[in-house]
Amino acid sequence: GAVVSQHPSRVICKSGTSVKIECRSLDFQATTMFWYRQFPKQSLMLMATSNEGSKATYEQGVEKDKFLINHASLTLSTLTVTSAHPEDSSFYICSASSEGARFYGYTFGSGTRLTVV
Amino acid sequence: LAKTTQPISMDSYEGQEVNITCSHNNIATNDYITWYQQFPSQGPRFIIQGYKTKVTNEVASLFIPADRKSSTLSLPRVSLSDTAVYYCLVGEGFSGGYNKLIFGAGTRLAVHP
Image 1 (cartoon, rainbow over the protein chains, first blue to last red):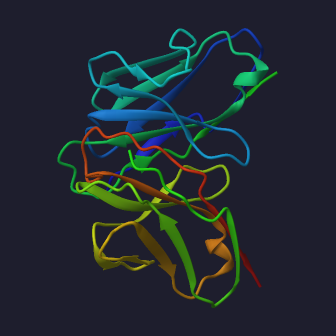
Image 2 (image 1 turned 90 degrees about the horizontal axis):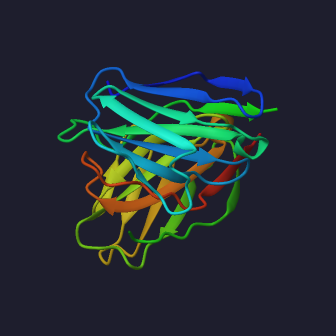
């Protein structure tokens, strides 16, 4: 149990366009989802926390107008990178947790490799 | 959130036991210690979680001394497939809830033939 599906796994887009990344909890209801960004050889950096039905909370330094997060249901959160630029190229990872979950720890998606050309 | 300190990298050979130590001097009373494993281009995977003393599961053991200011992840008889980055995280009640996970630098383990 406790599976988080992230889609797409890899995307290439042109500079100036927007890209949407989906994160789904397949077998549990995710009260909270987290979005991370990871550059090569570096650790995961938390971008924002999203709670179902409410606005996301962004970490300091993360542009909320550029990285739009929607958590419209208990099984789906989306991250939209708007007007993407080459410096937004990175590995984006989502994570989900559920209040009262019967598993230990948080479950992570498999990540999305975004390349902006 | 308690800060953690781990070795940046470690090297081992197949069949050996690997112990990765994490320091968390400012751990709070309600904090648990959790370890994750990450392979390249994949999301982190939960390995083990503990609060005190020793926890063992099918893949690892976690040793936590009485003062809880450090912890040691023990991987028995590693194989090449254990080459990965290992993260130690400390926070309140990771069994669910809303607490965000802040990752440190992690330990890059390389297992050699």
